[in-house]
Image 1 (cartoon, helix red, strand yellow):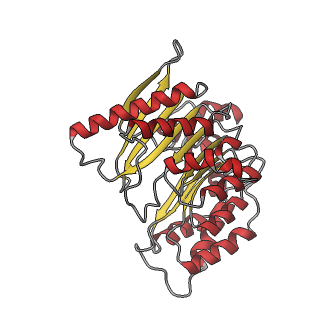
Image 2: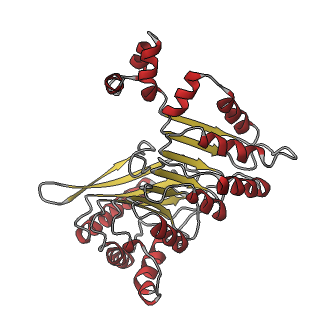
Image 3: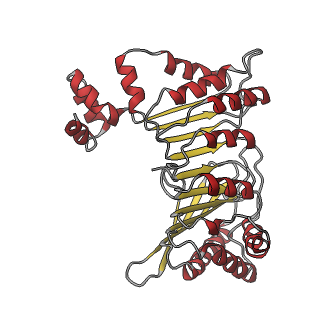
Amino acid sequence: MEILFNVGSHLTVSEISGAAGASSRLWYAFAKSLFWSVKFKGTQNSLPIKLQLFLSYTGERMSQIRKSIRHASIVLADASQGTEHPGTADLLPALIASSILVMPHLSSLEFDVRGLTPEQEASFNRQLRKMPTVANMRSLQVSARKYTMLSCFGMCPSEKLETLTVGSSFGTARLLEFAFDHFPQLKRLSVNLDTSLHRYAHDACVLSPKIKRRITLSDFKQLEWLIIDERLDHYRPRPRPQVAILDAAARARLVQDIGIVLADMPNLCRLAFATARHDLNTARPEIRFNTVTVASKLICDLASILPNVHEICLLESSCDGKSTVIHRGTRSSMDGGMSVKVEDGCRRSEFPMGLLY
């Protein structure tokens, strides 16, 4: 069986599907390659139906499919899309929790539950507190309100979680303190700042040394990948202070502050900054050219003071999240210089759009 599974990992989905249909033995051998990921996305009306269908199917093959799933995504649309039925506040939270529990080998979970009503959120918190730890969880990507997010962290094994993406404003200081205390093996982190990057970098340099027990990014010595996001939640999109600032003096101060914060992270090899732009799709060509030039300069300046980092990216996303421009700087293995190119997005599972294993 193990040999067949290894063979399956080198085949395309159509090739695996054809081979799996030949016999039951081949189907079970290739199940891990066919059913490694599942995604549920819907409104208050449609998401419960999808989850109920997933839970209602029985039989030996369905059991094998659930055991094969390694990555799951559960996304509830904005609360304005669809309505919760009276007296059913416990239904959707229970379905989400039950769906997670029936996937015993789940190692990567992505879910967005900001669309829960207050009653559903209270119920979901109760459900999460009762849940056992998801034993194989290595990667968590979560967008939720503060107390729900803390409950989500509680279901992760502290000694195994290596990747954490927080997609909504939580309170930067509190998030870093919690992650530092509970996830000692954390290697990849994406943090959504509750202030601008400029303000955070300045405060980390000036205020943190004066405040005992204040955790900053520099305390995460084991981090290998870091994404710093200054975008707001997608329910309240509006322009934020831009990373690619045009003022040379302000840019120099920013580079200096970031260098102080991140210089003591010996394992850091990939670094990205993400920001929302209200003019990404409407700016005149000469403005875009100027922005690209400044972004390239910023990346090269950071590379000069962070010699261990071999990839630095700047992401510009439109406020509606539909367009993304990536300025990707890659360090040359020959002379150590940084070459920067501009890309129109990348796969969500790849750096710098994601941290998933």
